[in-house]
Amino acid sequence: MPSSEYTFQASSEPQAGYEVLVRVIHKDDRFVPDISTMDFPLTPVAHSLNNLWQANVTIPVRPGTYLYRYQLLLTLPGTLTPKVIARWFTDPFARATDMGTKAPGQCLLSSWRRCHS
View 1 (cartoon, helix red, strand yellow):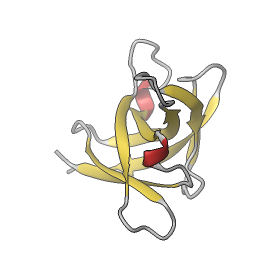
View 2: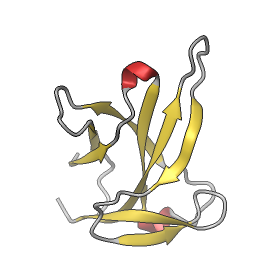
View 3: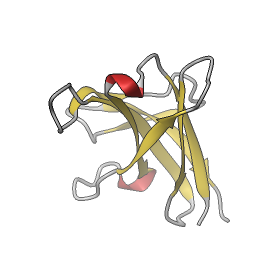
View 4: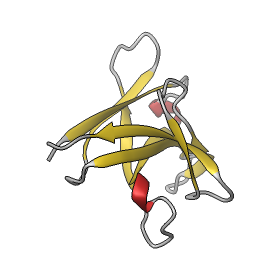
C-alpha cells in the first residue's frame, strides 16, 4: 500500500502532554456521515529546530484526492483521557483546499492527490 507523509510545525511539546493527529478522508466520502476519518498520530521530529511533528501513514489503495486536517489534544496531569484543544485546523502550507462537514458546520480541509499506484 502506498504511504504519505504529513508534517506539522507547532510549539506544542509532547512532554507537556500534547498530541497531534492528522485526520484523513477520501474526497468522495467527506459528506457521508457514516464514514469516519482515518486518524493517525504525529510524532515530534527529534532535534527539529522548528518543532516539527510528522507521520508516515499507509492509506487504502484508492486513487483520487484525499482531504486532511489536524487535531490538537492535551492530556492534563493526573488524567488519562486527552482533551481536545483544537477540534480541527488546516495545514497552513497546503497547496489546495476544499470544504467538508466532518466538524460542526462546514470546515476547510487541505487536500492531497494520490494517483494510481
